[in-house]
Amino acid sequence: MLLACAALLLSGAAPCYADAVGTSATAAILLDADTGNVLYEKDADRSMLIASTTKILTALVALECAPLQKEITVTADHMVEGSSMYLKPGETVTVEALLYGLLLCSGNDAALALADACCGSVESFVAEMNRKAAELGMEHSSFANPNGLDAENHRSTARDMAILAAAAAQDPIFVRLCSTSQAHIAGRTMTNHNRLLREVEGCIGMKTGYTKAAGRTLVTCTVRNGRTLVAVTLCDGNDWADHKALYQYGFEKITKEEAP
Image 1: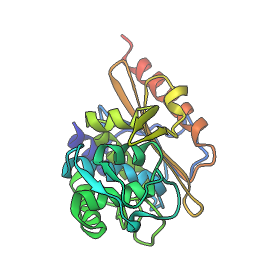
Image 2 (image 1 turned 60 degrees about the vertical axis):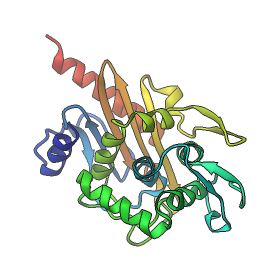
Image 3 (image 1 turned 180 degrees about the vertical axis):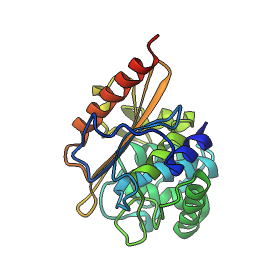
């Protein structure tokens, strides 16, 4: 299903209903992940900074490369600016704890520790990220780090991020992690930043993001009655409301089209 979905997105053959709903985003897309149909798009192929939504790919690569109970000792090299799960040099943590810190707290420190735990270096891990992105069909994306901090060659598009989210939604461990409202692990209580988990029926979360240059970025996924929709907004100051409106529009449209 995923490969077919990616092919439809990349070919431009999927039908798009762009005039029935709007967003404040610079770039956005609403994808029916089950059919590959694009229900809404706005500059979906525009190259954009994506901030911490990067961590969806970081998590998928980490889940491929290392078992959840693998342990790593935190070093000073894992300390970095921005959002954090507040790792301390010298402590030992599992890959699972780091993934919770990555997806719930948006920990930039967790991203660097995961890179070392999985591949031995950030550089090798980033190479795996770009390999995975190419494998998924993310043709207009390049990644320079595992945390999403701004970099000249660290960019994607709303369409590519929808492809990524559709793949992530098929991984049960990833879904368990990103849909957790609060986790108690590694001596920490970590709370999910994604408020749509509480405010949108069937939302399984995914990833928030923000830098000054990128603005607010948001990738979410919602499942209702066995149907899966993915919403992506990039540089959107009204992203929570926009995602709610997109899901309302999308599920209503599907219901009407499938009514006998």
